[in-house]
Image (spheres, rainbow, N blue to C red):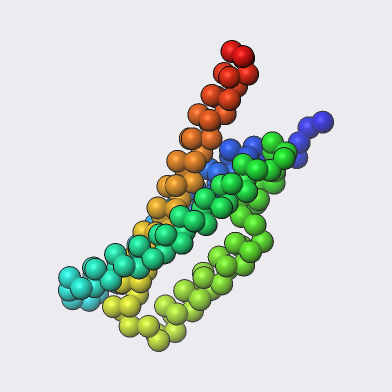
Length: 153
């Protein structure tokens, strides 16, 4: 039976997740870096960006590992392309995107906050995207090793 065109292999879901997270991270970090060009940055602001990166980086690392385990654990070898996230992750993503857009456009957050927070958050998101890509390549290597074990006994 032919699979629907919107179904992709589990490994491809890891690549899709990597692309989405990396694109989102680069875009958010870009907004933060643009804000850095509009202020007179001090070293403490860069340290705060690193602190934001570490806080969100740890959270996104755990989340990306959870999604990787979920994706690899699917019983079917192919799944709909949107299954790189579960429903909870889509809700969180919508909330974060909507809140971030509102915060930036509302004028409530000073430029220095946007610079510090968006740079750290964006770099953490991008790193999570890179992690999904690492898992994409590792999954291929792990599958190859499993197949060699079966073949070689």
